[in-house]
Structures are given as C-alpha cells and as structure tokens.
Image (cartoon, rainbow, N blue to C red; front, side):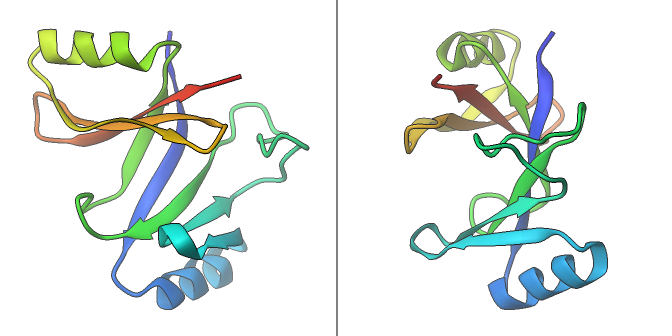
Length: 124
C-alpha cells in the first residue's frame, strides 16, 4: 500500500507564507531560492532528512503556478508504473516525472475528480 509522504502548499508571496507557517505552527523552514521552493519540517528529521516520528510527514512551500491549491504527495516504488496505472484508470499526468537532485523522482497527476496529487519515488 502506497503512503502519503509529503505535502506542498502554494504561495503568491514567499516571505509572507514563510512567516505565516513558521509563526503559526513553529515549522522549521529551509528556503531553496534557485527553485523558488521552501522545504518545511513539521517534525525533527534524521541525517537523511526523513521524519524521526513514525507516521509524520514534512513538506514544502512552492510558487503558485501549475499547482493552485495544497497538494498531498504519495510515495510509490516505481513512478513510471504508477503513471501508467493512473492513465489506465482515467487520470492525467500533468507533470511528467523529473529527477530531484539525487533524492528521487517527482511528478503530478490529476485524478478522475479533478484533484492534483503528487507522486514521489525515492532513488535510494
């Protein structure tokens, strides 16, 4: 069974969003300016940047562009096979899989109800 492993919240004003989420929830933020992205830690992480608490997830803040509302991301073992299944069952891949550093592969799809959901495959 594939699990929810990440979330993303879009922003119009990066500094405003960073301030809001850090002050309201105490989240630790790690901006990645070249990607217009902010890594969000909602819980402490280990040396591999993975949550230390069982069942907890971390996420990110990203520029509102193709993604218009918050997105959950589902971890899969094979992102290409998952994309195939999505298409077969009536979903649409809206962003093909792309490599994210040496960490993994990311993609976005629209389900049969019009919701945008992320996919993630670890590379190690």
